[in-house]
Image (cartoon, rainbow, N blue to C red):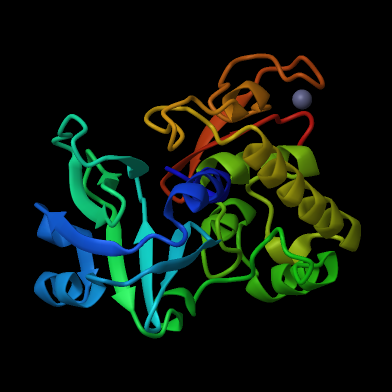
Length: 270
Ligand SMILES: [Zn+2]
């Protein structure tokens, strides 16, 4: 579930405790967390590496390490990261733990176990297929309009496609389409230039708001410091089936599109 704003919230919280620290060891009790390389190789290669920067690409956390190694973590459904003293109460759901040189550890908690860890020399192997980063200056309304016209797909599933735009998931797709006034079932190549511009503005608006509110605490998400995010208080349509639209007072509807719950206002979104 963590989408771009939730992952960015983790990144910002982890920089202070982690940048400059060295990873002195690691533990793992769920081999499938380690996507690449094989676990024994990853454990050997990561030991002694210093964390130089922490960033984000789409929904991936990207840790650049010394000696040209890059640690990449995807939180998937229920992943959570926190830095705690090594002697803190053991967490049975912390399946991968990175031990630090200051007596603390970075715990990757993941009850559903769908998360993934990669150690690579070339980050493009993992990150290369991702679409543009929607909050950068390089992501313009003109570029989005051109990409929408090329893809010829239904809007909602297209927004969830990480090769189209990186970082958007079910929550922020529904919210962006509401703020753009666009039905989730519209075809991407049938939008006017104004509609594409409205979608561009709406995507950036809801993602920036999500970061400002430290993410959406629906179901399992909470911040690295153990606090609830507040983006759920800003939802216009997501998870509001049958409730009144804040704009027109009509009921919010729910449909399933591409296998995903989709929430919209039939009056305000056309
Ligand atoms: Zn409405």
